[in-house]
Length: 139
Image (cartoon, rainbow, N blue to C red):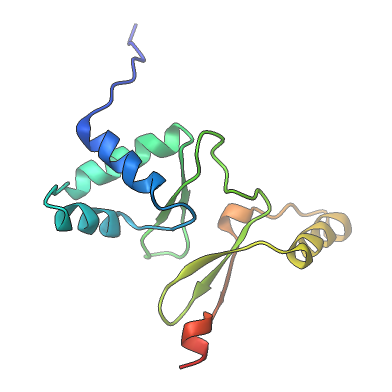
């Protein structure tokens, strides 16, 4: 019978510490790789993906798949495996690619309406509103 002993490598510990230091931030594997390269602690893409998969499986990190062909984003969410607000949706800027949380009562009412009136449960982790962020809109 295989053992389910959890071991922690230096790469695992470094990645977990980095992701914890970025609360509410959505990062791609490429951005994580670049972070460690800049700090003279290079981590290969295979290692980054392996550690991210492990953190997702442990419920410490949430993975967001946005569009076909686009890199997934990862966010540290802690032990409970959910965003800081379980009613959080996301907005993505079509110009700069920024991904932000949107937490407001109006969106929660829309979600409730969709459930009550249309008998449909919205998957918040996969629901993304596309448009322009404030910076891009004002340029």
